[in-house]
Image 1 (cartoon, rainbow, N blue to C red):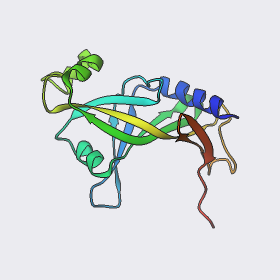
Image 2: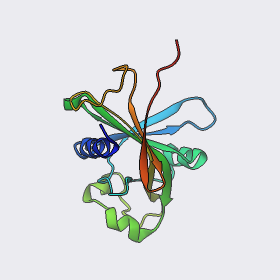
Image 3: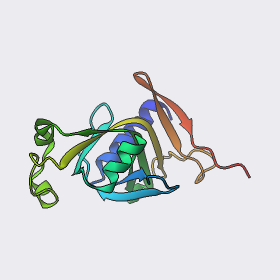
Image 4: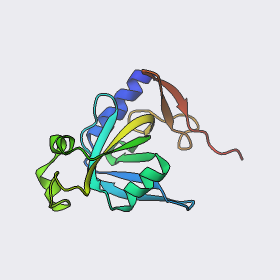
Length: 165
């Protein structure tokens, strides 16, 4: 399967998922913290955004590490896609208004004008995927996933490696 096909499968998988996990490195500890978010639709350039509160733990962890992973799981195809990259924390009210959803008021009653509400844009530089139904199962099946790393304007194929025995 070529890079173009893998990108298409990843994009289609993400498009079928409403919620995903946002995973950040725990500050000062050797663990990760995961929580459910409702991201925006994936942009053509592989960036994706979501709203959150500046005072929450995930913002502090993103600012400390400079990294974020979004994990999408799609059970009907026994599939997952992980987007890894650099988060940008955006305070601009016009940018927040541009992506605001009415349902966001439930979590952010002050609306996009609230200074504690920020837009997080993930700039993806690595995509990891596995999809049983669509045959994205690098050998040894079940121990390896396909990986695409951004290289300039394109993507380079690789695989995760199982640990040495």
